[in-house]
Image (cartoon, rainbow, N blue to C red; front, top):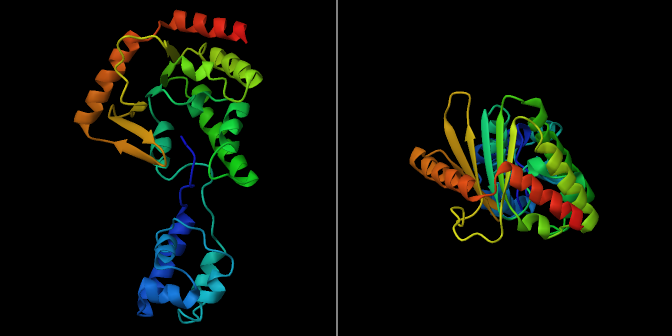
Length: 273
């Protein structure tokens, strides 16, 4: 699901993993040998050492005797934390968003996180499979709400969105959620730094049929792109690929409804609910 999933590892998790790896190698153990002694698979050991997995509370106690009883692991475990709410593959893009001067988004699957209401976002989170815990849902909403501040706190950043008409007509979460979502999107679209266009469902030519995309310009006028699928995301720095995506986005802007017509369509959909 977009902008969620397994949270990105924090600096403390990566540091803890490096400590585990250093102690294991000093003890002359392979990942498989170490895993056998502490009751873990070699793949789980690898995830721990790479900072991708939070160890269970008993891991330091089980591991210390195997790794020389230095106490280093127990002390390192006291400082463990991880950044909640953002998927590992999304974090680099999210970081660039905070300083970007231009952000373009085309979405055909769901309303982008920057435009979601809390009710809409929580509908997505609660229907995710495998199911999320209450704590995970809360962490993801907090992270999403924090990102949304960009729209108002960066008035000199140009935001542009092209959204498929059917995203609103699907009525995700029900009529009330959709009504609130449309009201919110109409409000955001009034900001001077935001442009929002709707791609009509009936459209003979469409330059975005290969899927959603995001484009971003840095303060140094470098462009990057990001494309996301299920449980993965692709950060694109290759200038030739980015240029191709820019070309497609520009064509979609001409194919979508005008800014005025897009707002009129949303208002009509709002009135039909």
